[in-house]
Image (cartoon, rainbow, N blue to C red; front, top):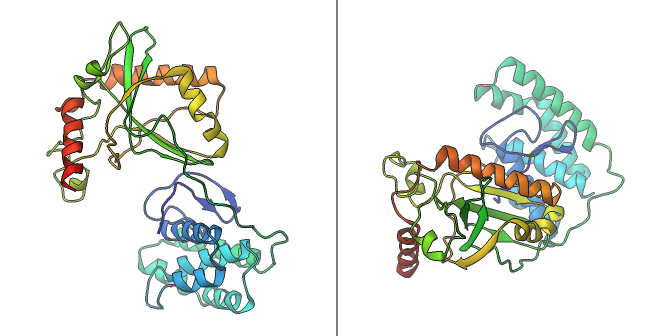
Length: 319
């Protein structure tokens, strides 16, 4: 299933934003499984698949402990699209009234407070989907990939609050006409004159995660051996996507390109404010980058940017 940064509180049926692993609350979409099901449903729906076909493909076996999270998520999606038939509605109603979902939750460690909140959320949810939606959700054309000069490998320079120059490197970005996923890592460059590519190559990434055996010693974190943990990253919707390049152009200057370092960020620590006015964007970016440098610049990679570049190029050659 695809995973995006979104969370719906179905007791209110409104976008709440943000996501964390596991179960966060008792609402219908207060868990990863329900959110992931919804994401996949609408991704496939927008690509032209029929709702019933998607539902039949995603429904889980009767002995799967996540089956009700998937069922309720699909019921909501089908209600949203005007495709919730009587048979499936009856099936959902029986599942809720049987209390099986609550029984499973209790078996997984849910306390009485959670169970009470869950029961109320299920009751409201059933009331909601029992009335046909007046204006069903229409298919939305999927985003179209576009080219961006801030593509992976772009080396960007900027000025700190004290007038000194610094640099960022773009990685892990995905660019579409209606949405943008960007990720930048900050280097230890700090020069009086505008930096050159050679200055950047000789610098380090402000992050001690890359190639850090101690940092990534446990089995779960081993996969992050080639990752950075201190990224400036964000998902931008259509409105902010329109501002992405012009706002960047007002503050950054691209001086060259490295290779595509690809899918190698494992954490998000900061983001820029593309939803503000351009001057506010500039002030926030300058303040944030200065704070990171002043606080974190001694926590950098052991490898220089040049050495890291060679690492990724050699790994790509092996593939």
